[in-house]
Length: 395
Image (cartoon, rainbow, N blue to C red):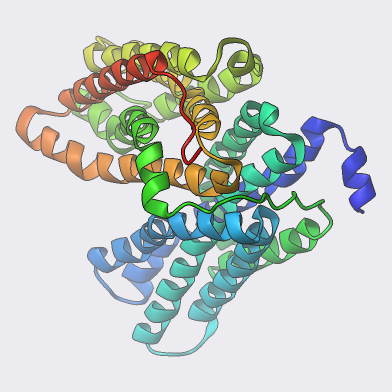
């Protein structure tokens, strides 16, 4: 099997590894549309508890990012991904048991939360180590290609997961959600064992604080960009409803289609122009898109602004990842990329509550103005970083 994986074309070999992230994001999406209703209507808890069940996973992923990076640096990205798939399998089992066991609502709730904690941990163990596994096999010159396919896998899995979860519930019952997660994790784990492991890189393992400080400037740029995505997903429906417009979902569809189109249409952009120049151009486009959403006189203009935002967001993370890896010793690449992902998680997670304060003070439209201004700040930060000499941490 290893010989076979060596003979695969590069793109197919990369896809055969980042597909584990696709599985992870599908699994993350499966319970989103169905678990809150079960907690509210079947178990009899309130909306705050339902929110806790969903939010526990994302908080766990956020807190587990540094651990995942350090484990991958020390033991290898492939082993970390396989550990994540095993944890994902266990989370599915706990979710299924929470549904089928004839226990009290409190026991069911505890099992659900435990399953969500494991699912959050599995997401951290799979997402970034998937990328570094593929980069380790094919070299840092393929970083942009790996990030491109990984982004498509992540956003594609997110788009598929929630509606698929509703379909599974309607045909197999709620326990089918947990069983599906279990099967996805277990079958992926079997497949992962057939993939060629990446070499474990030698070198000094730097403490997380040093890696964090080195990644901080690029991480802030990621956060400035990601707030726009978080605001769009959290508030576009309310914005349309407040203006008396229909079809707010088309904004999210336009964002996703434009994002994937940009990734597929310009696969060599980073290798040709470099990380910071591409990121700067993307953040300028994203800023323009968010301003269009803010000023939109009609739904069509808002949809166009969402599409431009998707185009802009498309290469921001990969471009900053390329620049981050260029400044980080190879033995710490997992920790560096996990830290970069930490800023994305924080920005998207905090966009809702922070922009909610802007809504209460200034109105819904100002959410997109604030997001555009943050994107512009990120653009200035990237332009400043582009002028600085490249220094590699620890060398």
